[in-house]
Image 1: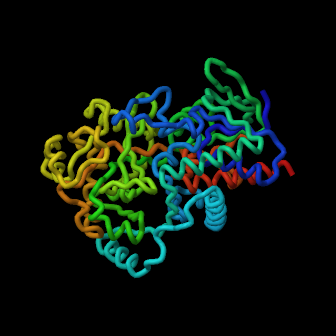
Image 2 (image 1 turned 90 degrees about the vertical axis):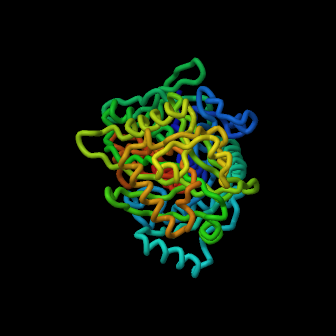
Length: 466
């Protein structure tokens, strides 16, 4: 089988590559393969069963058209300061332009025109002042919130657009390996159902997302594709009552705070804040259960959840950061008998585990009902745990009540995007005709920056046809 452009992965990066190729008038054949299902067939049974069913072969929340991010919350960060290091690769000005363009496409397909985190300048100044007083940095980042249910509608419309305009999309189609010869990529070996076949392409784009980071890391090692281990984020999902976060929620929607707490001074940050949101579970390969969070446009809870992530940069001789994070997750899952663990902040300080009875009589009720009360400190690395606790105490100065006795910490929250593929500004890897985009490239973190990277890839490929 032959095609002009083969795109592996139908997350935002892959989707926007195909979209921009079409909009630039590409006459070439585009094949987009995705091992998950079409967006209209992605359904998490937990809404009916009340508990995670460990769907096989893939978790519907992490895999399928639009990738993992769209089914968690659907927030578009409209700032070059958030979402990875793409601006370092292509330049700040070009990154900003790509973000604005990608945002216009989301608006075209039905995104809410309202932007969170702008307008109340005096209130933002007060929040920033309190952050500065405790040694934290508040990052200005306008947010366009799609909402979990609305994101599904938007990506559904985009899926329809691609199909109507001639993009071939194969679902349930997994990539087994790349076809390389004489330092060039000729295509990939794929499996769909019981059939294995080869696709030969003029250009191959790997956009496997955060879920595919470990897979592509191994592929790079096998074929000698130039890459370097990057950071890995290990952390927790924190949940508090809306009343605690009311000011920040109303003024910023999402407070992006960064700190370097003593004694280790690792970078620690807040991420993916969900006012009135719900804590959720995602399942990765080998039944690894990790925690995430999302919020709907209309359905709201009484709680706000957000991630606190501690970045780890490993040096020689260690070169397996993804495996390290996975081991942390596996150990936590073991303690929770395959479920997400949850513990109260006050119990951590008291050196005791949390019991289910204690959760049931708290003001704060967990929005992940099948999380298991226990002791996350028994699995969390000491360095990460100390960083997180000290960071939370600093955030408590910005948001009084954040580090309260009843505040809930869910574990494990892990972000797998540590394989940093070496590329030039034209997104060429060390292998000719092979490109890598989005979170699996190690250059982006999140929906918007991955979308912007896809736009750039589409433009560059279209220019080659001219």
